[in-house]
Amino acid sequence: TYVIAEPCIGVKDASCVEVCPVDCIHSDDEAEQYYIDPDECIDCGVCAEVCPVEAIFFEDDLPEQWADFLRINREYFQK
Ligand code: SF4
Ligand code: F3S
Image (cartoon, rainbow, N blue to C red; front, side):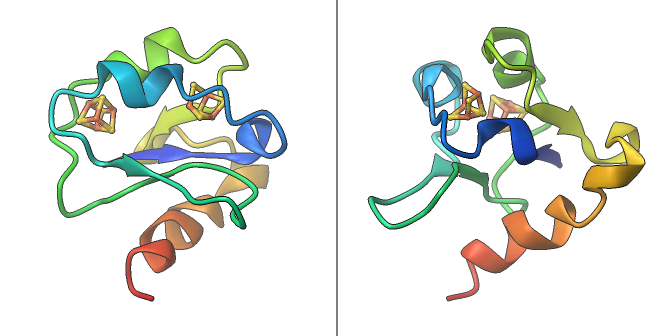
């Protein structure tokens, strides 16, 4: 799965939402960022290309300081 990390916080540009072919990127007014549903993501990588703040990474390529975001993205969909 792809994962949205810290640079999205407070930015929420949402360009990624527009291009995702399976509509698996979600948020809400209270959330500080957008999140990718790991059960729906097909690993196409298009979202990562359009994010203006480079917040999106394939899970294996997540910078170490943002490793927690794999769990953070998944947990948003377990509420
Ligand atoms: Fe959507 Fe593709 Fe990004 Fe996964 S990698 S969230 S399927 S645009
Ligand atoms: Fe966030 Fe970038 Fe998408 S800022 S909402 S991950 S385009």
